[in-house]
Image (cartoon, rainbow, N blue to C red; front, side, top):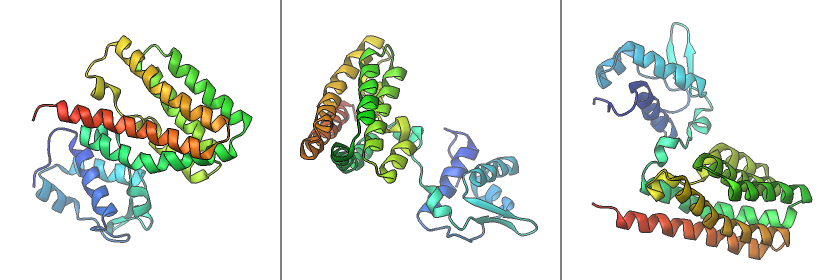
Length: 237
């Protein structure tokens, strides 16, 4: 099977082996195919294989044993899960991520309403203001992600915070994908629309009303899902 040329061949190999580790095809402790086998099976050079192995090792998925070869790291399945920017370039991928976030964001917001401190509110307010005042998409997306990160911290649950930090700006669906333009004015208008939902979540957390916070977060995520679902239906093919 020849790998695609759309991305670097090393990236393709990394994704392939990471997927095999994640789904259990390559179990912890299993030996990776030899360089020669990979070059023949995937029509790549040894240089590409070595680059892919180096990246897998950097991610904690591969361990080299001198004179023996490359093996799947013992804790590799815990390291294999990734959400990369190129995975979220299609509508279907964005919709799947939004589906996952519905439950995640609603419970996180509910806990934040119960446990937030004044410092948490200050961080949320700063993110809301930054999003409202943003002049381009990069600033707006960073402020959007910062708002959700502040909610995660307010939940006082390290797992919510760690997962939110892991996703980072990937929490925020691609606005360029939705708006189909780089026009700054369009992105500012869209950011203000999103921020109205954020304001509702903020007010519920400020009021320490878990049920209201949960409801506001669910409405926010559902509206995002519906926007991208409508975009999918408008797209040709």
